[in-house]
View 1 (cartoon, rainbow, N blue to C red):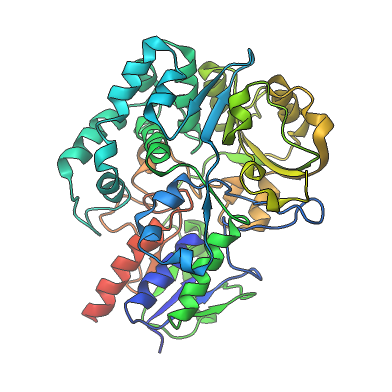
View 2: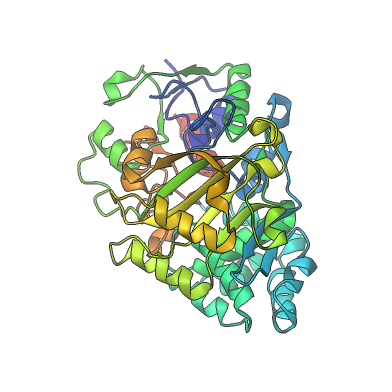
Length: 469
Protein backbone atom coordinates (compact mmCIF):
# COMPACT_ATOMS: atom_id res chain seq x y z
CA UNK A 1 0.00 0.00 0.00
CA UNK A 2 1.25 3.49 -0.91
CA UNK A 3 1.69 6.11 1.78
CA UNK A 4 0.23 8.88 -0.38
CA UNK A 5 -1.57 9.34 -3.67
CA UNK A 6 -1.70 12.85 -5.15
CA UNK A 7 -4.33 13.80 -7.73
CA UNK A 8 -3.44 16.70 -10.02
CA UNK A 9 0.06 17.59 -11.23
CA UNK A 10 -0.08 21.35 -10.92
CA UNK A 11 2.63 23.13 -8.92
CA UNK A 12 0.84 22.44 -5.62
CA UNK A 13 0.25 18.75 -6.32
CA UNK A 14 3.83 18.31 -7.46
CA UNK A 15 5.16 20.15 -4.39
CA UNK A 16 3.03 18.08 -2.02
CA UNK A 17 4.29 14.88 -3.65
CA UNK A 18 7.92 16.06 -3.46
CA UNK A 19 7.65 17.06 0.20
CA UNK A 20 6.27 13.65 1.14
CA UNK A 21 8.80 11.73 -0.98
CA UNK A 22 11.65 13.74 0.58
CA UNK A 23 10.58 12.41 3.97
CA UNK A 24 10.70 8.81 2.86
CA UNK A 25 7.03 8.20 2.10
CA UNK A 26 5.99 6.23 -0.97
CA UNK A 27 4.12 8.52 -3.37
CA UNK A 28 2.28 8.19 -6.68
CA UNK A 29 0.85 11.15 -8.60
CA UNK A 30 -2.02 10.98 -11.11
CA UNK A 31 -2.72 13.65 -13.75
CA UNK A 32 -5.64 13.75 -16.19
CA UNK A 33 -3.71 15.50 -18.97
CA UNK A 34 -0.83 14.05 -20.95
CA UNK A 35 1.80 16.26 -19.27
CA UNK A 36 2.34 17.68 -15.82
CA UNK A 37 2.00 21.41 -15.19
CA UNK A 38 -1.47 22.65 -14.28
CA UNK A 39 -1.18 26.44 -14.31
CA UNK A 40 2.53 26.24 -15.15
CA UNK A 41 2.71 24.90 -18.69
CA UNK A 42 4.30 25.98 -21.97
CA UNK A 43 2.86 25.17 -25.40
CA UNK A 44 2.98 26.29 -29.04
CA UNK A 45 -0.42 27.98 -29.14
CA UNK A 46 -0.03 30.20 -32.22
CA UNK A 47 2.73 29.40 -34.74
CA UNK A 48 5.57 26.85 -34.83
CA UNK A 49 8.53 28.03 -32.77
CA UNK A 50 6.50 30.41 -30.56
CA UNK A 51 6.39 28.98 -27.03
CA UNK A 52 3.58 30.45 -24.91
CA UNK A 53 2.49 30.02 -21.29
CA UNK A 54 -1.25 29.20 -21.36
CA UNK A 55 -1.66 30.48 -17.80
CA UNK A 56 0.97 31.86 -15.44
CA UNK A 57 4.02 33.48 -17.05
CA UNK A 58 5.79 35.78 -14.55
CA UNK A 59 6.63 34.41 -11.12
CA UNK A 60 7.20 36.87 -8.25
CA UNK A 61 5.75 34.37 -5.79
CA UNK A 62 7.62 31.46 -7.35
CA UNK A 63 11.10 32.87 -6.87
CA UNK A 64 10.18 34.04 -3.36
CA UNK A 65 8.44 30.81 -2.35
CA UNK A 66 9.91 29.24 0.80
CA UNK A 67 8.88 25.84 -0.58
CA UNK A 68 10.64 26.25 -3.93
CA UNK A 69 13.70 27.86 -2.37
CA UNK A 70 14.18 24.79 -0.17
CA UNK A 71 14.24 22.45 -3.19
CA UNK A 72 17.15 21.90 -5.63
CA UNK A 73 15.07 22.92 -8.66
CA UNK A 74 17.99 24.65 -10.42
CA UNK A 75 19.71 21.25 -10.52
CA UNK A 76 16.76 20.03 -12.59
CA UNK A 77 16.85 22.82 -15.16
CA UNK A 78 14.93 25.71 -13.61
CA UNK A 79 16.59 29.06 -14.38
CA UNK A 80 15.04 32.39 -13.46
CA UNK A 81 15.48 35.25 -15.96
CA UNK A 82 15.04 38.89 -14.91
CA UNK A 83 14.10 41.85 -17.07
CA UNK A 84 15.67 45.24 -16.32
CA UNK A 85 12.40 46.18 -14.61
CA UNK A 86 10.10 43.64 -12.92
CA UNK A 87 7.03 45.65 -13.87
CA UNK A 88 5.98 48.92 -15.48
CA UNK A 89 2.67 50.75 -15.63
CA UNK A 90 2.55 53.13 -18.61
CA UNK A 91 0.10 56.00 -18.93
CA UNK A 92 -1.54 57.46 -22.03
CA UNK A 93 0.71 60.56 -21.89
CA UNK A 94 3.86 58.46 -22.36
CA UNK A 95 5.01 58.52 -18.73
CA UNK A 96 5.20 55.41 -16.56
CA UNK A 97 5.40 54.29 -12.96
CA UNK A 98 7.69 51.35 -12.34
CA UNK A 99 8.09 48.55 -9.85
CA UNK A 100 11.87 48.17 -9.81
CA UNK A 101 14.16 45.99 -7.75
CA UNK A 102 15.28 49.23 -6.12
CA UNK A 103 12.86 50.88 -3.70
CA UNK A 104 14.41 54.27 -4.50
CA UNK A 105 13.89 53.85 -8.27
CA UNK A 106 10.30 52.79 -7.70
CA UNK A 107 9.60 55.69 -5.36
CA UNK A 108 11.16 58.18 -7.77
CA UNK A 109 8.75 57.10 -10.52
CA UNK A 110 5.81 58.14 -8.33
CA UNK A 111 6.78 61.78 -8.04
CA UNK A 112 8.25 63.81 -5.14
CA UNK A 113 5.10 63.99 -3.02
CA UNK A 114 4.76 60.20 -2.82
CA UNK A 115 8.36 58.98 -2.84
CA UNK A 116 8.80 59.24 0.92
CA UNK A 117 5.39 57.71 1.62
CA UNK A 118 6.23 54.65 -0.44
CA UNK A 119 9.63 54.19 1.14
CA UNK A 120 8.16 54.40 4.64
CA UNK A 121 5.53 51.84 3.64
CA UNK A 122 7.81 49.10 2.30
CA UNK A 123 11.32 49.60 3.70
CA UNK A 124 10.59 48.40 7.28
CA UNK A 125 9.57 44.97 5.96
CA UNK A 126 12.38 44.28 3.49
CA UNK A 127 15.14 43.33 5.99
CA UNK A 128 12.79 40.69 7.42
CA UNK A 129 11.21 39.63 4.15
CA UNK A 130 12.26 35.97 4.17
CA UNK A 131 10.76 35.44 7.61
CA UNK A 132 7.70 37.52 6.79
CA UNK A 133 6.89 35.68 3.56
CA UNK A 134 7.25 32.31 5.31
CA UNK A 135 4.90 33.44 8.09
CA UNK A 136 2.48 35.04 5.65
CA UNK A 137 2.28 31.96 3.41
CA UNK A 138 1.96 29.45 6.26
CA UNK A 139 -0.65 28.93 8.94
CA UNK A 140 -0.40 28.53 12.72
CA UNK A 141 -1.71 24.99 12.22
CA UNK A 142 1.33 24.14 10.06
CA UNK A 143 4.02 26.48 11.42
CA UNK A 144 4.00 29.01 14.24
CA UNK A 145 5.09 32.51 13.16
CA UNK A 146 8.83 33.01 13.43
CA UNK A 147 8.43 36.77 13.78
CA UNK A 148 4.94 37.49 15.13
CA UNK A 149 5.73 41.17 15.74
CA UNK A 150 6.61 41.86 12.09
CA UNK A 151 3.66 39.78 10.94
CA UNK A 152 1.36 41.84 13.17
CA UNK A 153 2.81 45.10 11.81
CA UNK A 154 2.26 43.80 8.30
CA UNK A 155 -1.33 42.95 9.21
CA UNK A 156 -1.97 46.47 10.47
CA UNK A 157 -0.78 47.84 7.12
CA UNK A 158 -2.36 45.21 4.89
CA UNK A 159 -5.64 44.04 6.42
CA UNK A 160 -7.57 47.25 5.65
CA UNK A 161 -8.97 47.63 2.11
CA UNK A 162 -6.60 48.77 -0.61
CA UNK A 163 -8.73 51.88 -1.04
CA UNK A 164 -7.43 53.10 2.32
CA UNK A 165 -3.86 52.30 1.35
CA UNK A 166 -4.22 54.29 -1.87
CA UNK A 167 -5.36 57.36 0.08
CA UNK A 168 -1.87 57.70 1.50
CA UNK A 169 -0.67 58.79 -1.93
CA UNK A 170 -1.23 62.10 -3.71
CA UNK A 171 -0.12 61.31 -7.27
CA UNK A 172 -2.18 59.12 -9.58
CA UNK A 173 0.94 57.26 -10.70
CA UNK A 174 1.43 55.65 -7.30
CA UNK A 175 -2.26 54.93 -6.78
CA UNK A 176 -2.61 53.32 -10.20
CA UNK A 177 0.42 51.05 -9.92
CA UNK A 178 -0.61 49.85 -6.46
CA UNK A 179 -4.24 49.35 -7.50
CA UNK A 180 -3.00 47.23 -10.37
CA UNK A 181 -1.00 45.05 -7.99
CA UNK A 182 -4.16 44.29 -6.03
CA UNK A 183 -6.05 43.54 -9.24
CA UNK A 184 -3.66 40.68 -10.05
CA UNK A 185 -5.84 38.49 -7.80
CA UNK A 186 -9.08 39.94 -9.25
CA UNK A 187 -10.06 41.33 -5.86
CA UNK A 188 -12.23 44.47 -5.60
CA UNK A 189 -10.11 47.31 -4.23
CA UNK A 190 -12.52 47.84 -1.35
CA UNK A 191 -12.18 44.28 -0.11
CA UNK A 192 -10.83 43.06 3.23
CA UNK A 193 -7.02 42.55 3.30
CA UNK A 194 -6.55 43.72 -0.28
CA UNK A 195 -3.86 46.13 0.92
CA UNK A 196 -1.81 43.07 1.89
CA UNK A 197 -2.06 41.72 -1.66
CA UNK A 198 -0.52 44.87 -3.11
CA UNK A 199 2.20 44.96 -0.46
CA UNK A 200 3.19 41.32 -1.01
CA UNK A 201 3.63 41.82 -4.76
CA UNK A 202 5.63 45.02 -4.23
CA UNK A 203 7.89 43.48 -1.58
CA UNK A 204 8.42 40.38 -3.70
CA UNK A 205 9.72 42.55 -6.54
CA UNK A 206 12.13 44.43 -4.29
CA UNK A 207 13.36 41.25 -2.64
CA UNK A 208 13.95 38.99 -5.66
CA UNK A 209 12.15 40.35 -8.71
CA UNK A 210 9.37 39.17 -11.01
CA UNK A 211 11.18 36.69 -13.26
CA UNK A 212 10.14 34.32 -15.99
CA UNK A 213 11.46 30.77 -16.24
CA UNK A 214 13.87 30.17 -19.11
CA UNK A 215 12.00 28.31 -21.83
CA UNK A 216 8.61 28.92 -20.19
CA UNK A 217 6.68 28.09 -17.06
CA UNK A 218 6.76 24.41 -17.94
CA UNK A 219 10.35 24.45 -16.66
CA UNK A 220 9.04 24.84 -13.09
CA UNK A 221 6.73 21.85 -13.38
CA UNK A 222 9.32 19.75 -15.19
CA UNK A 223 11.92 20.46 -12.49
CA UNK A 224 9.50 19.42 -9.74
CA UNK A 225 8.54 16.27 -11.66
CA UNK A 226 12.16 15.29 -12.31
CA UNK A 227 13.04 15.74 -8.65
CA UNK A 228 10.02 13.69 -7.61
CA UNK A 229 11.09 10.82 -9.87
CA UNK A 230 14.63 10.95 -8.45
CA UNK A 231 13.10 10.63 -4.99
CA UNK A 232 11.32 7.47 -6.08
CA UNK A 233 7.88 8.96 -6.72
CA UNK A 234 5.77 7.70 -9.63
CA UNK A 235 3.90 9.95 -12.08
CA UNK A 236 0.95 8.69 -14.14
CA UNK A 237 -0.43 11.00 -16.86
CA UNK A 238 -3.55 10.58 -19.02
CA UNK A 239 -5.27 9.24 -15.91
CA UNK A 240 -8.58 10.92 -15.12
CA UNK A 241 -9.92 10.30 -11.63
CA UNK A 242 -13.71 10.30 -11.34
CA UNK A 243 -14.05 8.60 -7.96
CA UNK A 244 -11.81 7.44 -5.14
CA UNK A 245 -12.13 3.84 -6.30
CA UNK A 246 -10.19 4.79 -9.46
CA UNK A 247 -7.07 5.17 -7.31
CA UNK A 248 -4.79 2.51 -5.81
CA UNK A 249 -4.96 1.78 -2.08
CA UNK A 250 -3.10 4.36 -0.01
CA UNK A 251 -2.89 5.66 3.53
CA UNK A 252 -3.68 9.20 2.35
CA UNK A 253 -5.02 11.03 -0.70
CA UNK A 254 -4.16 14.64 -1.58
CA UNK A 255 -6.14 16.53 -4.23
CA UNK A 256 -4.77 19.44 -6.24
CA UNK A 257 -8.29 20.10 -7.53
CA UNK A 258 -11.10 22.56 -7.02
CA UNK A 259 -13.31 21.94 -3.96
CA UNK A 260 -16.17 21.24 -6.38
CA UNK A 261 -14.26 18.44 -8.09
CA UNK A 262 -13.06 16.96 -4.80
CA UNK A 263 -16.61 16.87 -3.42
CA UNK A 264 -17.78 15.06 -6.55
CA UNK A 265 -14.92 12.53 -6.56
CA UNK A 266 -14.95 11.79 -2.84
CA UNK A 267 -18.71 11.92 -2.36
CA UNK A 268 -18.69 14.86 0.04
CA UNK A 269 -22.08 16.12 -1.15
CA UNK A 270 -22.66 19.75 -0.14
CA UNK A 271 -19.60 20.07 2.10
CA UNK A 272 -18.13 22.90 -0.02
CA UNK A 273 -21.40 24.43 -1.16
CA UNK A 274 -20.54 27.80 0.41
CA UNK A 275 -17.30 28.11 -1.53
CA UNK A 276 -17.36 30.98 -4.02
CA UNK A 277 -15.59 31.21 -7.38
CA UNK A 278 -14.44 34.56 -8.69
CA UNK A 279 -14.53 36.32 -12.06
CA UNK A 280 -13.07 34.69 -15.11
CA UNK A 281 -10.46 36.00 -17.50
CA UNK A 282 -10.18 36.42 -21.23
CA UNK A 283 -6.63 35.66 -22.34
CA UNK A 284 -4.77 36.26 -25.60
CA UNK A 285 -1.39 34.82 -26.54
CA UNK A 286 0.34 36.65 -29.37
CA UNK A 287 3.04 35.83 -31.87
CA UNK A 288 4.55 39.22 -32.73
CA UNK A 289 6.77 40.42 -35.54
CA UNK A 290 8.97 42.38 -33.09
CA UNK A 291 8.62 44.07 -29.70
CA UNK A 292 5.47 45.78 -28.46
CA UNK A 293 5.72 49.48 -29.51
CA UNK A 294 5.11 50.96 -26.07
CA UNK A 295 5.09 54.75 -25.95
CA UNK A 296 6.68 54.73 -22.49
CA UNK A 297 10.36 53.64 -22.68
CA UNK A 298 10.12 51.98 -19.27
CA UNK A 299 7.53 49.51 -20.55
CA UNK A 300 9.94 48.28 -23.23
CA UNK A 301 12.36 47.16 -20.47
CA UNK A 302 9.81 45.48 -18.19
CA UNK A 303 8.90 41.81 -17.94
CA UNK A 304 5.33 42.56 -16.84
CA UNK A 305 3.29 45.57 -17.95
CA UNK A 306 0.00 46.63 -16.32
CA UNK A 307 -2.53 48.43 -18.52
CA UNK A 308 -5.05 51.02 -17.30
CA UNK A 309 -5.22 54.78 -17.51
CA UNK A 310 -5.69 55.35 -13.77
CA UNK A 311 -6.87 53.73 -10.54
CA UNK A 312 -10.49 54.70 -11.23
CA UNK A 313 -10.39 52.77 -14.49
CA UNK A 314 -9.01 49.74 -12.64
CA UNK A 315 -11.75 49.90 -10.01
CA UNK A 316 -14.44 50.27 -12.67
CA UNK A 317 -13.14 47.27 -14.61
CA UNK A 318 -13.01 45.10 -11.49
CA UNK A 319 -16.56 46.03 -10.48
CA UNK A 320 -17.87 45.30 -13.97
CA UNK A 321 -16.48 41.77 -13.99
CA UNK A 322 -16.98 40.88 -10.33
CA UNK A 323 -20.25 42.58 -9.40
CA UNK A 324 -22.08 43.89 -12.46
CA UNK A 325 -21.89 40.77 -14.61
CA UNK A 326 -20.49 42.49 -17.70
CA UNK A 327 -17.19 42.73 -19.51
CA UNK A 328 -15.49 46.11 -18.97
CA UNK A 329 -15.41 48.67 -21.76
CA UNK A 330 -11.83 49.60 -20.86
CA UNK A 331 -10.39 46.52 -19.17
CA UNK A 332 -7.54 46.44 -16.73
CA UNK A 333 -4.98 44.19 -18.35
CA UNK A 334 -1.94 42.28 -17.17
CA UNK A 335 0.58 41.61 -19.89
CA UNK A 336 3.87 39.70 -19.89
CA UNK A 337 6.59 39.94 -22.54
CA UNK A 338 8.95 36.99 -21.92
CA UNK A 339 10.97 37.67 -25.07
CA UNK A 340 12.49 40.74 -23.40
CA UNK A 341 14.77 38.36 -21.46
CA UNK A 342 14.20 34.99 -23.15
CA UNK A 343 14.57 35.42 -26.93
CA UNK A 344 14.63 31.65 -27.41
CA UNK A 345 10.87 31.57 -26.83
CA UNK A 346 10.31 32.75 -30.44
CA UNK A 347 12.12 32.64 -33.82
CA UNK A 348 14.89 35.20 -34.27
CA UNK A 349 13.56 38.75 -34.33
CA UNK A 350 10.05 37.67 -33.26
CA UNK A 351 8.43 37.77 -29.82
CA UNK A 352 5.77 36.09 -27.72
CA UNK A 353 3.37 38.29 -25.75
CA UNK A 354 0.72 37.36 -23.16
CA UNK A 355 -2.28 39.43 -22.04
CA UNK A 356 -5.46 38.92 -20.07
CA UNK A 357 -8.41 40.93 -18.78
CA UNK A 358 -11.12 40.20 -16.23
CA UNK A 359 -14.60 39.13 -17.34
CA UNK A 360 -17.61 37.70 -15.45
CA UNK A 361 -17.54 34.06 -14.46
CA UNK A 362 -18.54 31.87 -17.40
CA UNK A 363 -18.66 34.84 -19.82
CA UNK A 364 -19.02 33.67 -23.43
CA UNK A 365 -18.17 36.75 -25.47
CA UNK A 366 -15.05 37.76 -27.42
CA UNK A 367 -12.96 40.52 -25.82
CA UNK A 368 -10.24 40.61 -28.48
CA UNK A 369 -11.26 43.91 -30.08
CA UNK A 370 -11.74 45.66 -26.73
CA UNK A 371 -8.39 44.46 -25.40
CA UNK A 372 -6.49 45.46 -28.53
CA UNK A 373 -8.13 48.86 -28.56
CA UNK A 374 -6.95 49.30 -24.95
CA UNK A 375 -3.42 48.17 -25.90
CA UNK A 376 -3.30 50.67 -28.75
CA UNK A 377 -3.77 53.52 -26.26
CA UNK A 378 -0.39 52.68 -24.74
CA UNK A 379 1.35 51.03 -27.71
CA UNK A 380 0.14 52.65 -30.96
CA UNK A 381 0.72 50.33 -33.89
CA UNK A 382 0.47 47.18 -31.77
CA UNK A 383 -1.92 45.47 -34.18
CA UNK A 384 0.61 45.88 -36.99
CA UNK A 385 3.02 43.61 -35.08
CA UNK A 386 0.55 40.73 -34.69
CA UNK A 387 1.41 37.61 -36.70
CA UNK A 388 -1.06 35.32 -34.94
CA UNK A 389 -3.16 35.20 -31.80
CA UNK A 390 -4.69 32.44 -29.68
CA UNK A 391 -7.68 33.48 -27.60
CA UNK A 392 -9.17 31.73 -24.59
CA UNK A 393 -12.25 32.81 -22.68
CA UNK A 394 -13.60 31.25 -19.48
CA UNK A 395 -14.93 28.13 -21.21
CA UNK A 396 -11.65 27.41 -22.98
CA UNK A 397 -9.60 28.01 -19.84
CA UNK A 398 -11.84 25.68 -17.83
CA UNK A 399 -11.53 23.02 -20.55
CA UNK A 400 -7.73 23.24 -20.35
CA UNK A 401 -7.66 23.16 -16.57
CA UNK A 402 -10.65 21.85 -14.61
CA UNK A 403 -9.58 23.88 -11.55
CA UNK A 404 -10.49 27.11 -13.39
CA UNK A 405 -14.22 26.93 -12.73
CA UNK A 406 -15.96 29.57 -14.83
CA UNK A 407 -12.57 30.80 -16.01
CA UNK A 408 -11.44 31.69 -12.48
CA UNK A 409 -7.67 31.15 -12.65
CA UNK A 410 -7.41 31.61 -8.86
CA UNK A 411 -9.59 28.53 -8.15
CA UNK A 412 -11.81 30.61 -5.91
CA UNK A 413 -12.72 34.22 -5.22
CA UNK A 414 -10.02 36.21 -3.41
CA UNK A 415 -12.49 38.48 -1.64
CA UNK A 416 -14.18 38.84 1.72
CA UNK A 417 -13.07 36.40 4.39
CA UNK A 418 -12.33 33.89 1.64
CA UNK A 419 -9.16 35.85 0.90
CA UNK A 420 -7.68 34.02 3.91
CA UNK A 421 -10.26 31.49 5.14
CA UNK A 422 -10.45 29.06 2.23
CA UNK A 423 -11.96 26.68 1.27
CA UNK A 424 -13.89 26.68 4.58
CA UNK A 425 -13.71 28.30 7.99
CA UNK A 426 -11.46 25.74 9.66
CA UNK A 427 -8.31 25.42 11.75
CA UNK A 428 -7.26 22.69 9.30
CA UNK A 429 -8.15 23.98 5.82
CA UNK A 430 -6.29 21.13 4.11
CA UNK A 431 -8.39 18.47 5.82
CA UNK A 432 -11.77 17.16 4.65
CA UNK A 433 -14.63 15.09 6.15
CA UNK A 434 -12.59 11.97 5.39
CA UNK A 435 -9.55 11.69 7.69
CA UNK A 436 -7.37 10.26 4.90
CA UNK A 437 -8.36 12.80 2.22
CA UNK A 438 -6.75 16.25 1.90
CA UNK A 439 -6.90 19.20 -0.50
CA UNK A 440 -3.84 21.19 -1.59
CA UNK A 441 -4.93 23.37 -4.53
CA UNK A 442 -5.03 27.18 -4.77
CA UNK A 443 -8.41 26.91 -3.06
CA UNK A 444 -6.40 26.54 0.18
CA UNK A 445 -4.11 29.07 1.89
CA UNK A 446 -2.13 31.00 0.87
CA UNK A 447 -4.18 31.01 -2.34
CA UNK A 448 -3.45 31.62 -6.03
CA UNK A 449 -0.03 31.72 -7.65
CA UNK A 450 2.73 29.39 -8.77
CA UNK A 451 4.49 29.02 -5.42
CA UNK A 452 3.74 25.49 -4.21
CA UNK A 453 3.01 26.67 -0.67
CA UNK A 454 -0.50 25.22 -0.60
CA UNK A 455 1.03 21.86 -1.48
CA UNK A 456 3.82 22.35 1.05
CA UNK A 457 1.39 23.22 3.84
CA UNK A 458 -0.96 20.35 2.98
CA UNK A 459 1.96 17.90 2.92
CA UNK A 460 2.79 18.92 6.50
CA UNK A 461 -0.73 18.01 7.58
CA UNK A 462 -0.45 14.70 5.74
CA UNK A 463 2.89 13.59 7.10
CA UNK A 464 1.82 14.43 10.65
CA UNK A 465 -1.14 12.11 10.22
CA UNK A 466 0.99 9.40 8.62
CA UNK A 467 3.45 9.46 11.49
CA UNK A 468 0.64 9.16 14.01
CA UNK A 469 -1.01 6.18 12.29
